[in-house]
Length: 168
Image 1: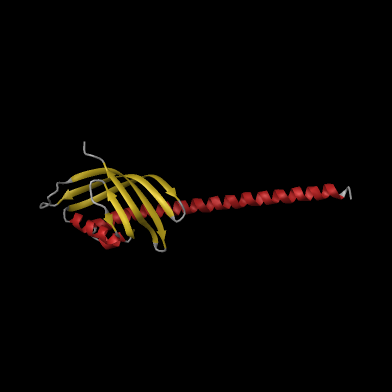
Image 2: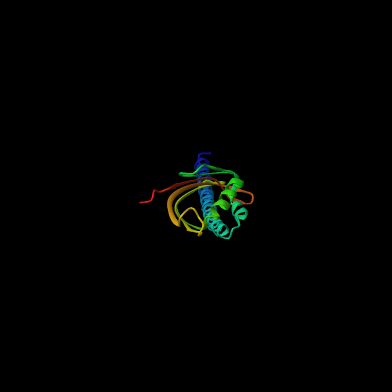
C-alpha cells in the first residue's frame, strides 16, 4: 500500500498537469480565433467605409444606405441629428445637389467586441460645388466615432458621431 501511494500521487500530478496544458491550448485556440475575427471585422468595416464613399459619389444612395442600420443615428457637429436610414439617404440626396463630395477616412483606433465594434478616426470631406450651389467648394476636417453592429448581412453603422474642426 505504501508503494502505491507515490504512484497514485504521480498519476494525479500528471493528470492535473494535462488539465492545465489542455486549458492553455484551449486559451491559445480562442486567442487565435478572436484575432481572426478581429481582422475580418476590421477588413469588412474598412471595405464598408470605402464602398459608402464610392456609392455616394456614383449617386447610389440607397445602396450606400445598406451599410447603415435601419435605426441609425448620425450626429455631425453643427447639424441636426439624422435619425434612421431613410433620413440618411435623403440627407445624402440633398447634399449631392450642392456638388461632388468625397470622403477620405483614416482609422486611428479599432475595438472589436464580438458582434459590435467601435471605430475612431479622422476624416477629410471635400466638396467641389456646382455652379448654382449656394455653398462654395470646401474641405472639412474632423474626427469621428462609429459604433458598428454585426447583422446577418454584414456590419452596419448604428451610431455615427462626427466632430468637424473649425476652419483656421
